[in-house]
Image (cartoon, rainbow, N blue to C red; front, side, top):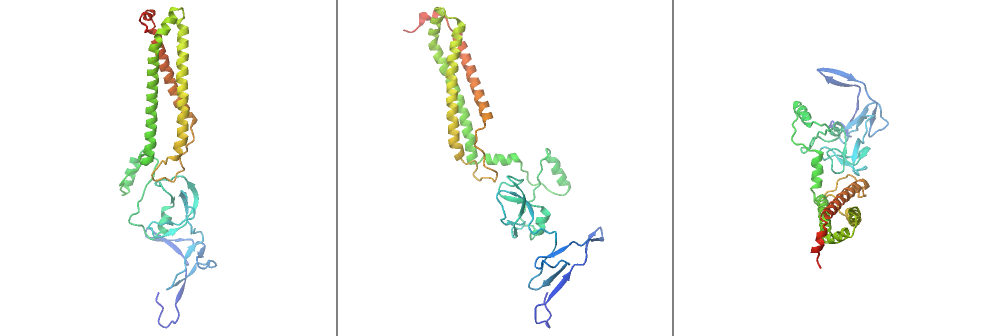
Length: 311
């Protein structure tokens, strides 16, 4: 306000709220008056505040919370967070701290939209509104939004976020390391089977001589299986130990993401169940290969081969 010319000092006015009403369907409906408080004068509680040219007092309901409640994602603490227009900043009162939140891959807060809109100086032009859902049929939600006049301009799934992190350099490197480990295991198994088969051809003359001397086929089979089991098991356990040591030494020092999310770091503890399952499956395949090679070797034993034995 501009003070009249007859006033030598700055004029101000005492304003008192005596009633509240809301207009609904063309009619005014009175609302009960809440208990009041004035930010600049905590003792004033009758709904009176001062308006002047140089500054106004702020009248609020006594239940107003100057620090809004929020769900915090990441280490936010009491740091100021921007409003919707990126021009207003205020701390928040965390009511729940989460490792992740819908629509957030970095540190941030989730607050009530209506309260955030009232606190901010308007909505920024670049503000984006998101709708989060865990429904199995998001198409139904999109149809419902379209019926309300809202347009869906993009969609983003949790799997898309996971794929984007996995496609980053460090995550892709870890994936390639896993593929390389599986390829190395397949090559090692193939090499073991080939070595067993090559050794079996050389042992054929020894087995033929043992059978000619009266050794029983069952005893020969047991001896062959025992030899192959010892060879395969020793190699498997040695490879397992070397792999675990390499994983312990390397995985903790390899970053998972180019831009780390605020979620807790991935654990590098050895998961006993998956490791045991993989080792058991590999050992079973190796033992089956050893049994197959042993049976092929036994079926190829002929005493007549002793005539063709190399000198």
